[in-house]
Image 1 (tube, rainbow, N blue to C red):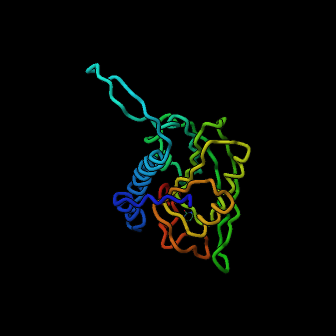
Image 2: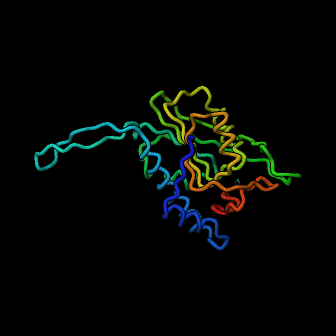
Image 3: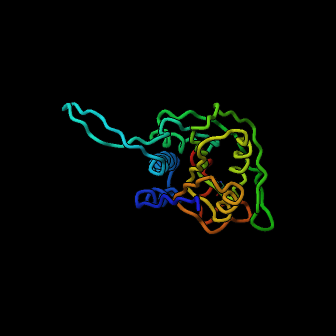
Length: 215
Ligand code: URA
C-alpha cells in the first residue's frame, strides 16, 4: 500500500496546532513550512541508498551512504495552499526543480459528500522531467483526490522514476481513489481523516488551508 503516514509526535503536534481554529495565519503558515520539511525528510528516508567511502580531514577513510536521487527531485506546487509546504520541502531537497499548477476547486454545497470535485486548471508549467527524476506533488489537503488526479493526468507524458504526493491531511476516500488509478504513486500524509462533508471539506480537517494560510 503506497500510503506513508508521517505520524511522528512532532508532526502530530504541528498538525494539532493546524487543526485548532484559534491558530492564527502566521503560525498556520509557519507550521505548513515545518511539516513540509518533516514530510520531505520522510520521503528522502524511503529513497534508494548506495554505500560510499569518503576521506575525512584526518586523512582516514569513512564508509557512509549517499541517497540516490536526492538531487533529482521535481516539486510540483499546487497553488496556492501548497506554497508554504513547498518552502519546507525545499529544505529537504534544496536543489529541486519546480513545477506549478494553479488549480481551483469549483466549490458549493452538494446533497451528499461529493465523490469528485470539478477542478479548473488556470495555468500549469513543469520543468523537463527525466526518467531519473522523483516527482513530488505538494497539496496540503487531499479530499476527493480530484486535484491530484488532474495533476497526474497533466503529467501523463512524463516518465519519472517515482511519483510522490506530499500532503498534510488526506481523506480515506481520496487516498483510495488515487491509489486505485495510480498504484505506483506514494502518498505521504500526516493523518488520514474519515470523512468529507457535503461541501467537499475533510472532517474533522483543518478548514480551508489556502484561506487559513493567506487570508
Ligand atoms: N481543501 C482544503 O483547503 N480543505 C479541505 O478540507 C479540503 C480541500
